[in-house]
Length: 262
Image 1 (cartoon, rainbow, N blue to C red):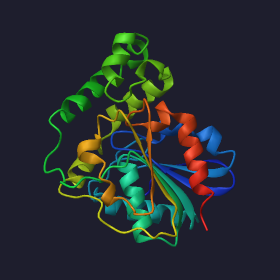
Image 2 (image 1 turned 45 degrees about the horizontal axis):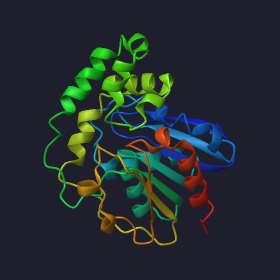
Image 3 (image 1 turned 180 degrees about the vertical axis):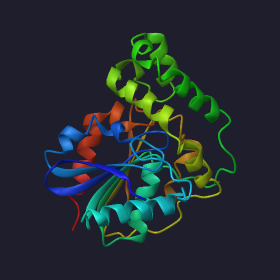
Image 4 (image 1 turned 90 degrees about the horizontal axis):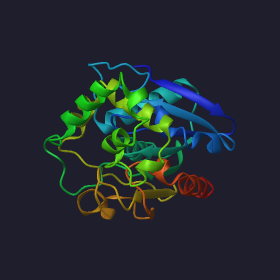
């Protein structure tokens, strides 16, 4: 299937892949800086953002990795740097493991899949999160002007929720409300984890926040599953979307990682 992919800037290609229930709009804080150095490609996964859900499309991370690669090939993008958040981080790891000749570097922002015990069912609260986003979507433009609404929506996502811009919050609510691929992706991750090897020739940086309630350190940040040569970074006062909470630090780490490629 055809994915919605947007381009910005010029230079070496760098591909940004969002997380579950999110969309390419999540990358707005870092696109301006990256587009000065790279040709930036933002991908909307199936049932997210501007890409419709195709019920015949497998939604597990390996299948999504193959789909992203196919779409990039059709655009003539053969070699590229990768940046992925959450589910997008897992998809990026799969791409690097299976197609090392195409990946120049990889930066994973709170990547999913690094757990010793795979999940066997959905989080109990996930249905409530999705229903809340759908119910708030039509009034979000107004309610997000109020601190209480912003707190309800983003306190568990970001320790710096008060500092998040109105645009980031509005985009996030809209993305979650419209993410028809949310539960298909959830089901595609069940009973799986990332367990492949990645070539030491590919520079890899893994970044987690010290306040990630979505993928907590005790259960979802298993370093033994990450590439042995990966640089592991923990950012302070940062949640599950490091590009929102620690924008400048994330940009700096991406730049440093891309400069290491051979």
